[in-house]
Length: 250
Image (cartoon, rainbow, N blue to C red; front, side, top):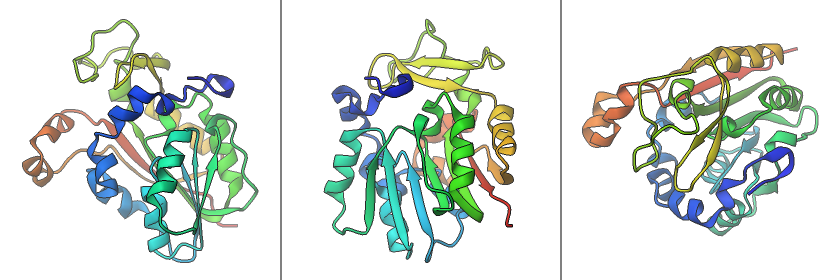
């Protein structure tokens, strides 16, 4: 399913949406995401903050931000199905849900103290444009905190490569230096993601004016693997990275 600028709105594909609903992070929210404790540790205090969640999905983080005392929360997603699910799961009216394509997103200047995103930005082709938009949208001292699939993980997702039945790519890493679209069969055929080197992610942030606060090439702890042996694979290579950046204070 396509949107403007060839955005693949895969989350509105019924087969993909049904598969995504089976994930632990879909069923249990933030607590179902093993990287959540590390990502949460990167967040600023949310009390009285204006928060924007990019690719908000079911709205788990939006509801968390409200519970933490955020002054306002806006959840943005390109998927109508995701936004419909988020509305169904939210029992209060403190969150503004917005349908928008992150490739062409516009936000008011100085409208947010925190922009958050979980596992959404690796779908985007125009990350430079988005980072420029977010820099202007944040107040001086405001933070961008996000997670994305690690380029070590996305590098092998080349069209034509074999995939395991669960959709994970074969290893080892290959064609890391060749940035661009990668094709994965994950809950649906032909899921498009963008591979970019870690340096490209970081340099795009710097070029937009951000200062880096922290980056974590996340992997599970021994305790998490003991709890969930399926996570052992994630200790072999980082599947995702977490990053916190700040718009410098005036």
